[in-house]
Image 1 (cartoon, rainbow, N blue to C red):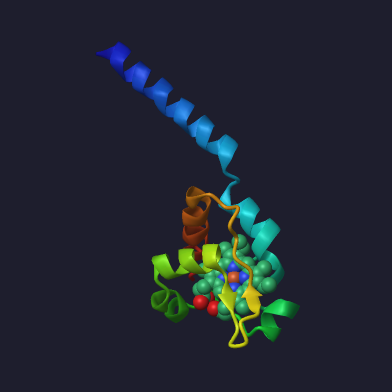
Image 2 (tube, rainbow, N blue to C red):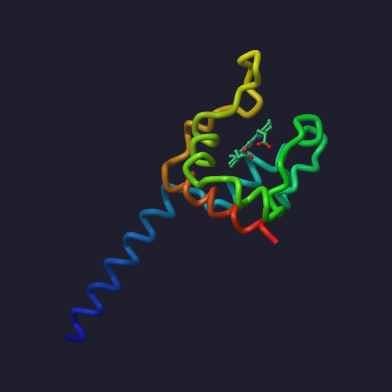
Length: 111
Ligand code: HEC
């Protein structure tokens, strides 16, 4: 019985290590790819963010209107303006896990 638990634990740690080597943590991706516009605090009050009139992710109402699937779609598919120009470029290099983590990360801005 005890042996079995240890094996399971070892397997779990192996999977965790494997996942970490593929995906950057959401905080790192956010910092590197997203803060320029959305801000480190998610409020979108950066120079670019203000120009693009970004949503404030600390606003509970904004959060309530966002669906996880739409957020993931925006991250992987990007957002275009009416003229078809990229307002936010698609992040096609991110793994599905990284996108899911980023969505969860954005949810945590809600105050
Ligand atoms: C060049 C500026 C820019 C960068 C960089 C950027 N975004 Fe955006 N993002 C936008 C704009 C513009 C919108 C659409 C307006 C809005 O929704 O506030 C948007 C919308 C979104 C949305 C859709 C939800 C919504 O607010 O309608 C999500 C989710 C999102 N961004 C996440 C991210 C993530 C995660 C990253 C980094 C991987 C990122 N963004 C990087 C500009 C940017």
